[in-house]
Image: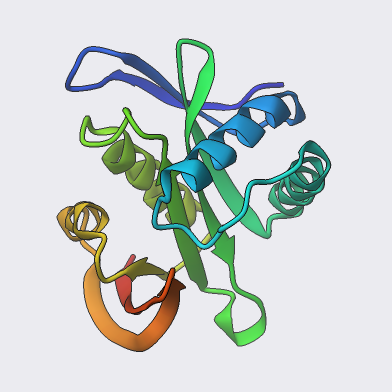
Length: 179
């Protein structure tokens, strides 16, 4: 059964459904990640994914969501996946900490989707008892940093030269939000 977190209209009047991912999203996930790779988006994945690799990844993600190890929210516009986000829940003494990650397809940024998705992740994180959300973002990704700050994250540190992009090394900005 499909789990819907909410629906809203973007600033440019597109209808977005925020929902849990499903295995039937496989081809959309594959197209999504490969479009980000082709764009050179500031994400950890550098190479295009095969359908088999993406199926393995999605199967593991869905299993982790089912087991309560992760929270995942996707954004859908006109029946197509355009955004993906998740919170990975820590273990042991870090069980109260979640690691947040989010990506939006080109053409769907700066219209409110990321802000809404993070809002849902914050709400769902509180429901499962998380007390702290953390994330890492490329120092050069000013657009994402602005969104994170807008919803309450603050910079708590940097890992110098933690990210290699081509022949350049970038700092990873570490941000946190106490819930």
